[in-house]
Image (cartoon, rainbow, N blue to C red; front, side, top):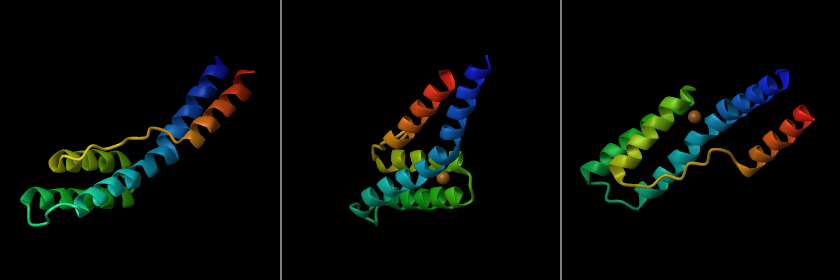
Length: 104
Ligand SMILES: [Cu+2]
């Protein structure tokens, strides 16, 4: 029981912690790159740029979930497919390694 709990807490920490925090810059970067190739006079592109700026501000304010939601809104407006990486390979490795230690 305690082992299961420990794994649950660990996964929560890894997902909700740094993983959540660095997801936003990743999405914002993808959007910024995409929008740079678009016509800035297009109202849709302007709206997208506004949403990207908002997502950036939310991320900097520590509101990562809101930032991701806003980035997704921007992606929809701009028609950009976003690549969401839930965990980096290094993080997956970290979780797997820690799990093994706990579950032994
Ligand atoms: Cu963030």
